[in-house]
Image (cartoon, rainbow over all chains, first blue to last red; front, side):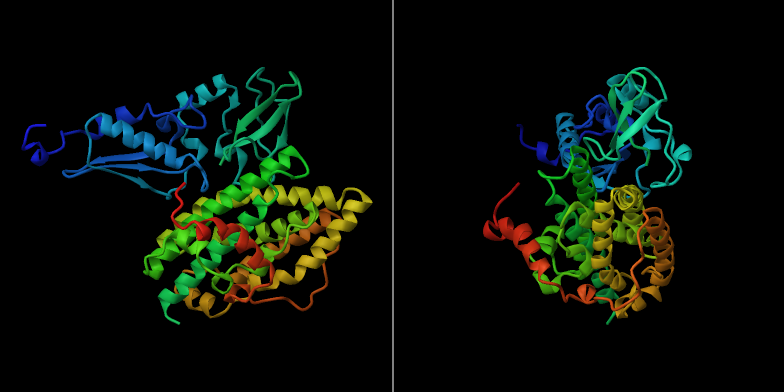
Length: 172
Length: 252
């Protein structure tokens, strides 16, 4: 490396550019979704001395956060951004309403019922049950088998018409 | 007690409640009574340990002695823990675990609801996040209370005994002390009288639906919030802290 490079500033990047690079980072647990579609990529700021990426966890104990940070860091470095910080922001808390329309479509195609809008399922923990459609046959004759599924963000359901079990991405 | 000391103590209570119950729930992994309950216990534990991380990280910042959440969780001894005694009670049979969970969830949910409006922004943010999760926990444990209480004669009798045994540990959840009073005057701590009212109504409704008797008001255990624990906590810490204490340089 030629001498003098150390003093050269990091190549100028814009938030739109960084966002475009990061939008393709997949969620480690539901790889059909990107972190942008899932709504956990909250903000990108490009300051004179560093780039700041802000993410938020879906659930407090989400074990994927570290893997997501590593994937973001790897992608930034690949694009020549050396000075960056990845911050976690809790407020406002993540909501399943933040999953984009494209994200919802991809979940359905993947076989996971997308979350009912929070307005339709009441406050978290309300006793009324949302109407969840089967991702295989579309029937709403479904029953909840378990409040908790394979990951913190999913519940386990079964369709009474096609008899297939399926994951439901919880409304929160 | 100054404001910073009170805040540190308060955060330890919030964090240790979540941490110790989360640790207890992980003891079910591998032998819960059904696969769905295996997943349910592990998921609730995961939420609680995630919440504990938030509270304890902030506690470390407030303390200002350079301790992070891992140091606080894994290098304090029994007398330094501030969880309520209810949370360290053994898992027992599944009815015991469910009764402990429900009695706590019915308290945790309105507590976090109140703390969302806390004057301290960090507390408000962690509470708003945790509140959504606690809602799911409460709904699940309340459903199990009804299923077991209004189930067979045997499940009913067993759950009634669980509720009776755990009841004396519920008092300290709602008993304010100097820490609560100092912070409540600053708009930081939740008003435990209001939280109790919500808990009381919730518990009365659930016990009735579950065909269970509400235990008579009587003598209540106390001390966990101030660091005086039952022998149970030592065993929990021995298991939870063994690895980092034996191999302090170990990295994940």
